Image 1 (cartoon, rainbow, N blue to C red):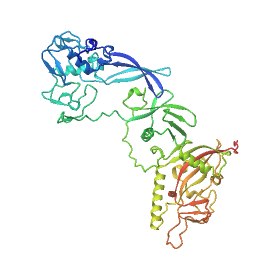
Image 2: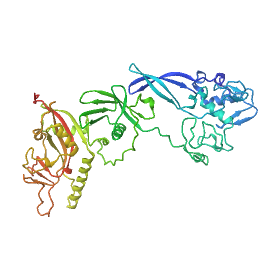
Image 3: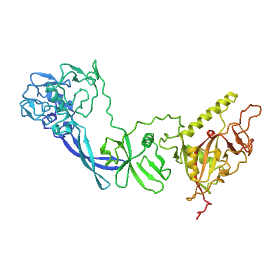
Image 4: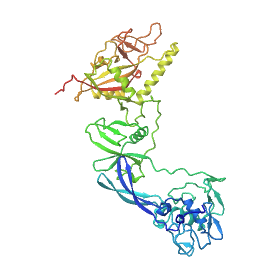
Length: 532
């Protein structure tokens, strides 16, 4: 430290360093203005730290005969005529922070003015279009009173101006810090509900609450408001998603790293796909793509114009049932969600393999496989399985419940939606016959269920692969409105009926909690022709 470079001492006047930077947001490059307020941002000191500059100034002999300790625990000169530019108190001398001293006193000694965030506007260019955006500068050196000063200088001026208490305590950072003064720095004030020099509100009602026995407990972080989701309309206005349950659904799915979210609006009039990687929303009916934004309501630089100022209710309280590992968070805004599976997903492979056991891959082409997530139906199904398992244990049966993946063909997209919301309704049986009972019918083979599907205008066909708790079963009859009683068991019923007990291929269920429409298969039959 004794052979220091002369140029590393703080003899140059501090100047804020203005410039520009490139910011990338969702793949878009933006040019933003910057201002660096620290002395070490200057070219003269760019390779030197603040602590090093302090020590170099002191060791270079710019110190007085009497030393005083600053709030940083550093020996500091107060009477020398050859003083550090960083801490100079001489009249009309420039400090290393660019402040002029007059008669030993600064023209603006420290942070006397209360901190007020500086609001303004700026311009941003996005794909050739210039936007005006709102800005808010949260640093005290952005205020006009302190625009030529650095944060370090303000700290020192506050201390030397006497805005300190009679007793110093050490913070958790090893810095001497006043805690009892009634004349405190605006930058370091601990008064209740006062703004600090850094734009933070301290909520302590007792200044001593955050410091006890030399230990520092930082105040609770200041909330910046909830993160909100917006879509951009044709006039480039950012519209918040509504209702609140949809806001929370988007946030949950974004945080869980779900790639695609499908949902409908206006009673299924419009269907949409949200891509969280591209931050876009696509109307699946018209093909229109819109941009999305996710930002805090208080972060006005994140969006250009907000269409409404909504008061947001408290977060929803949702009791989640335990989800299978591959499932995504529940949709809080709609009764069910279609989650499109990727070809590489284990669930997709499992469904397609079973589908093609009896279907021709050349004639029947899979377009998509969706997992159906309906909180109400899934909860009832899981409770039913637990109840059946407990009953088996009572009878001394240690096996798992007989649960099978079975197919069910549908004749329209409207029927698909009804099943996704309300499940297969055995009370609507009879449309295709009731040979084995008046219940909901499921088939082992996709080929059999294919006969109950119909092509749509777009030549699409839909078939469910359901999870079915077949349990104990027996041969069905057309007159059955429920399973028959087990022989020798007083009023105990079978769980389901089948066509052939020794080799069942058709299953009939009479309790809607005993099955769940887990997968929806969308496919085309190459033999279909367009209906005029």
